[in-house]
Image (cartoon, rainbow, N blue to C red; front, side):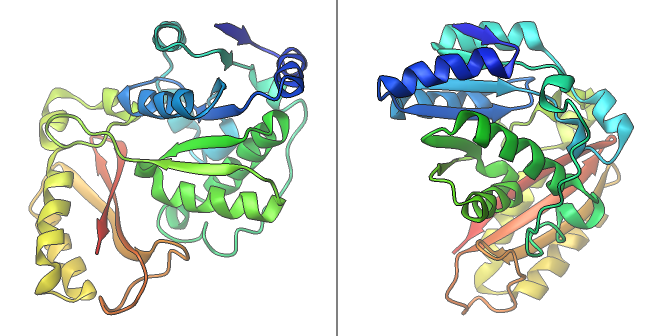
Length: 280
């Protein structure tokens, strides 16, 4: 496994792979790797001749400086995991390598960035678009792998690829959960013992909500779920939205012939946790 710190070094190796007509899979991460990330890596290794994992905590997607400062970083452990998994290449650039100067680009994400996470995290998805576009232009992979836990991000990245007219297959991989149902996230390690014990309530409530789909309208289901969270002293429900999986527009009727996803965000012990569930 080769670890690259600069774009120039990485490009030389990628050019060699392309000359040999090797397929390249990209797994973009911010590090603090867990089994969810490893599931993306496994899929990429299965699908491609060569797999590149990027580890970069992207500053432009954090609208809260303290959140950026607190974001978990475990580079040594990450490299051990990736080496054991059989990854070919890791790209771990410093900030000035990816942003030698301020990136002032503003992306037209057609409103996908204004709802749910975007409603309370101004500029977050524009920052995501900045770093993902940089990585895609640098690597130009055949496939790129993202977890469905960050569902809104995945929808936006697919839109970005279409907008950039790039021939990259965005592969969505299932949410990987802890044994108690909590969606795996790098942020989970910031939870205290009491908060961690409470966290599975999120998934448990989503499962219950899915069962009530037959008896409650989307708006009634949202009200039911909101009341459930009002009984939780440790948790603050940021939002629960049932949306079209392409446009992210709210679903007002189950009869609409679109794929429906229930997306949720919760603050627990100062940590923002995301999850979602398909509603058929």
